Image (cartoon, rainbow, N blue to C red; front, side, top):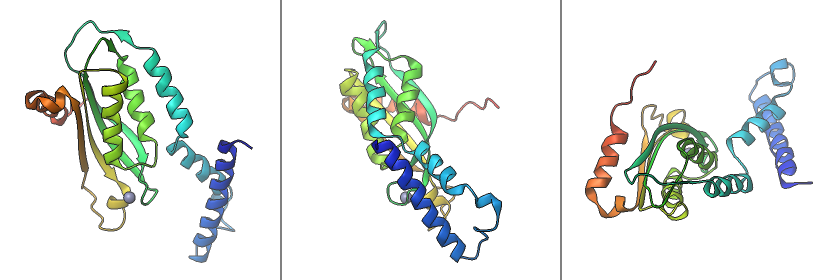
Length: 202
Ligand SMILES: [Zn+2]
């Protein structure tokens, strides 16, 4: 059996146990049809929120093998990418608003690929701090740029929906490499651009 198939089975087994616990809490798990296929459905939902590492790595390799010659050397920013992830401490969803930027070297990444890269790396059970630094690192080292930056605001359901119930609190992290690290003006330009109020398009 492939790891992927085994993981799907284990998730479903796990959710069956969770449903047994919910039954013990007095909910009609055995009689209400809404729970009838929940273990499988919940397992599939969870596996959408956590992508297998091999799939992520393959897609990133492919993405980085299809870059374009740089025709400019100004900052490229992809901002306010809404992405979903999972916190490793509670396995509860995190809603991220992620902005990334780089100063091109000889190659650039298609602009939609930047958003894709952000989404791919978010869908893992990793700390927001690590996600921030990995994004900056990939855009610096693997894209061979002059500098890179990532700025992430995270709404962690483990903080907002339980525990201290900090409904409005956002966790903010940033990571910089190369010119963004060495030049305070470049870093500030990036931060000003990604922390400006978003355009209200709706
Ligand atoms: Zn958490």
